[in-house]
Length: 320
Ligand code: AMP
Ligand code: MN
Ligand code: MN
Ligand code: MN
Image (cartoon, protein in one colour):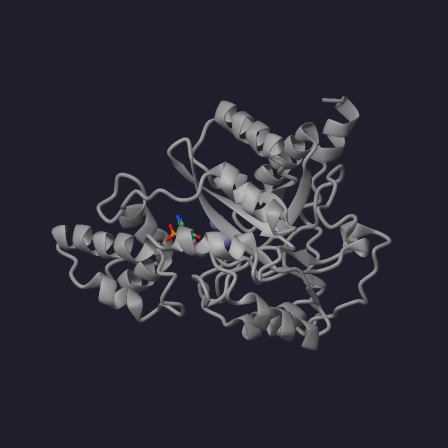
């Protein structure tokens, strides 16, 4: 890579959090101006009760507004059922709303997440295809519960259901909340580490969508495909090269660079990767709820210099 570009990227302005939170704690939301896309507070990844978040779409919209978010996307897992509500609430707060989704994908035997931004969500290829992706979740959850019974933890399926806001979308997060409630684990992270990840007693492998399907559904629904939190995947550098190449060849456009799931080092690493691959950079908290997420909506560093923000040409965008 060109050395000066590399140096520029290395200057991650990690201290420059665009949170737009005033000293009084209330959000200050400057009028949206496209003159300098770097200064726009865009948060393009979060979850509501329609998947595994703890706030409703309306509560999230209010929270995004209070935190000074100017461009906001709700990206529930495998589900677009919250988008109409989120859009109405966002508009009531004067926020530009970008309908989104986070699709579960199986690639090289691992689970990855592909975000779709500005997807057409009503009567679209995506809406129909996601039904298929969600369909195995119930059986998987029952099997997880059976596996946990074998290690002496009974009735977790019923316990998890208490946390489920959408019967079509029971996830590992709901199981984790149940185990924390029962004081079997100290927090959600602890549950995943001890029970819900590959090799652990409550982990049940599952076949999600293929990478090709996820990208094609998003493109067919007029959306923008983005690789979610690449730093979280248990794959080596060569596999990451391969993933990015395949994603680009399928028509993928962006990669998350600044996310609540990345360390500061990872901001730099994935900013470089985005530049080298010719991918645009996205920014999103991956907020799941005030009790569980380290990063609040919109309270993230701005993108490192040298990135092309995924929203750089959205002044012309027709939101779906
Ligand atoms: P599922 O789609 O049912 O496999 O659940 C995936 C969700 O579990 C992710 O979207 C996260 O919200 C959560 N999750 C996965 N791994 C972890 C972890 N190590 N710590 C906390 N939450 C996690
Ligand atoms: Mn989640
Ligand atoms: Mn994810
Ligand atoms: Mn997410």
